[in-house]
Length: 158
Image (tube, rainbow, N blue to C red; front, side, top):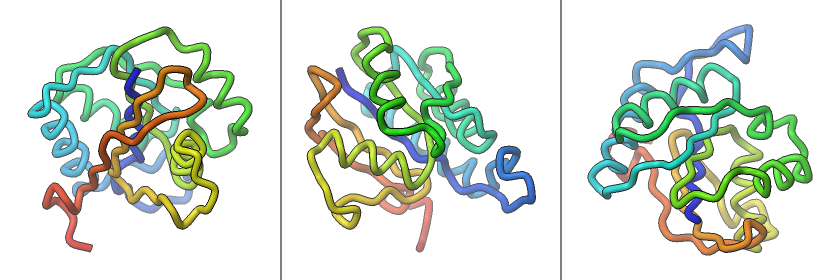
């Protein structure tokens, strides 16, 4: 199974954190990530997003561009979800070849580091719109297959 951990793209500021939408740049970042996946021949069998607006919008754009599956929303991808909650949820998702998980900092990078066996936070960070592909057989440990960012795709300058 390949797990694609995607941090939501750039979002607008706002008083209601859960309702913050993607910025125009974030929409562009999400579409470029989708194009990258489509050109790589990757179609998701399943896609899961945090319920926060910026994550759902990122997921919808990526899934739409790369012509993949429908999108399910789960609280397991919120920052408030504990590592144990996420692990239990991950073990329970149906077997699939390509699964996209769209969430937030700092927990998305923490989940990736834990699957890779990395303990120090500085060893792996995910910028907005960052995508890490991990391959796993048991959902407890994984190997990094690739990591791509909007900057590498030429969308972001900073």
